[in-house]
Length: 356
Ligand code: NAD
Image (cartoon, rainbow, N blue to C red):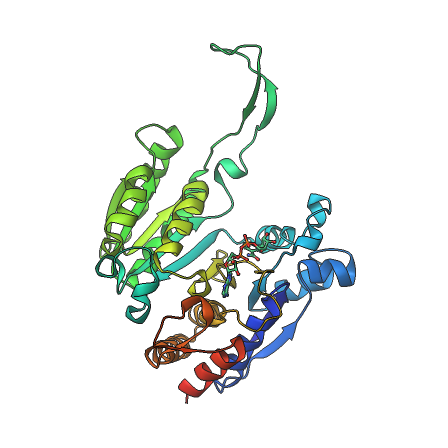
């Protein structure tokens, strides 16, 4: 099995080195091949997604991605900025389903901004549609307002749209994920106001007929945002469109205290995927050896489960991470008094030791 390793910029190479260390001690015969991406791709090859990197990502069975971006590239024209590499990979690999688990290990309950009893033991999965919705819908632009009370003024406009196929395929991903977890799906929309929302709801309801063992509830997005901070443990799998998912998944991320703990997956129709931590390249701490590598290590676990069919190895990594946290080993972002503060590398070593 071939894995494309794309470390990227900032803390990317530091956290990726720890994930690679973990993959190498599992006793599997993975072929790991690295390539430049983001700012590193631009610096070495003049483009954030060099052709050789894209070719490697396409040829591999899965992609493990660090993070991209650095202040030094902020003045580049938009098409050459590091972040374009992610959009290019999503488009070229047809990655339409973004899976973001939000798990709060009981040992880290104190790191959340919510009360420990509200979040301790939280384990939810947010599934965001990635390629449709108002972010890509056309027409869009700035024009002369054609009607209404502001007729003749300049106005900005975008188009929210979802094709039936786009909704069906993301609904299948959600129901199948729920089958492997708590058997419950909450579909989030704005059906009371938006035509797209009612259409989304109708199609999800229709797909649900194929999943008799899974319970489905529909929720308006404003209520979902409220419930996420009021009683987040009531959710199992939440599925929603691109824009609502963008907002709700960041909200869920913060429930868990540190962004340094959160993995993510972006999947295509055949479960081939790109796996990356939910955080960025953290240029403020790059090179200091203090970044938390657990989100990347947990992303590697998701890769084993969803793309490489190695659920047992994924369980092993997740159990090792729990063990390390229970031992009180902490990087700075999750440190509390009474625990043991370690570097990025020491955290990686601790996970390797816990794997036995
Ligand atoms: P960020 O996630 O990089 O950092 C936000 C804060 O979280 C910083 O204080 C950082 O030090 C901290 N942090 C992030 N990851 C951490 C970790 N593993 N351990 C400890 N602390 C961690 O977000 P930002 O500062 O808004 O963006 C920085 C750069 O990253 C920008 O260039 C942005 O475009 C890029 N970015 C890339 C991705 C990606 O590669 N997928 C995602 C988001 C942002």
